Length: 229
Image (cartoon, rainbow, N blue to C red; front, top):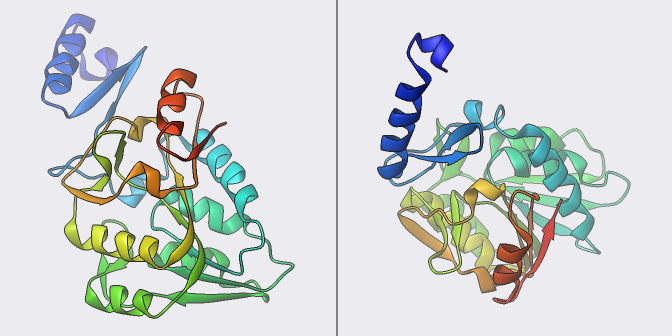
């Protein structure tokens, strides 16, 4: 960054410190990454370039928890999109999603029925939101929901910046028998504007080894099994 911006490394460190103090980034050894909040949310184009290897491992581990589920809700976001592409194609499966990209990832499977929720399409994520999406979900009984979030906290639960997105996620969880959270470790400890679930609502959490084993144990005490890959 110092070379690209033609400034001293000390300037970069100082500026990152200011951004961290404002809650806009979280610093790691040798780098920093954005923290999503009520005033900031990465779009899909950015998400497909961040932590890709970690997200692929998370998706591969999460799909192992499918079990005998015949109907599956797959959330918006890049990690759920990766998971959708890994769903088995050798057995009948119904996939419900609000995400246009996720629907496209599984639509060509002969054994998979894809139900795309209606509503307004958010340009940032290419996912539908609003009362139409929630009304469609209200008429379903879904075996398993794979859900992500912008933040997950032991104290504040699962959060996202936009109320209409939170509504769709909450309704999907309400109508699902089983619930699994998938998320990169950078989501943990972060919080945003709208809470749509508590940690204890999930049977499992799948993340990467960037979440310490001690912190994973603290989340597990709230109910879900925690998988670090």
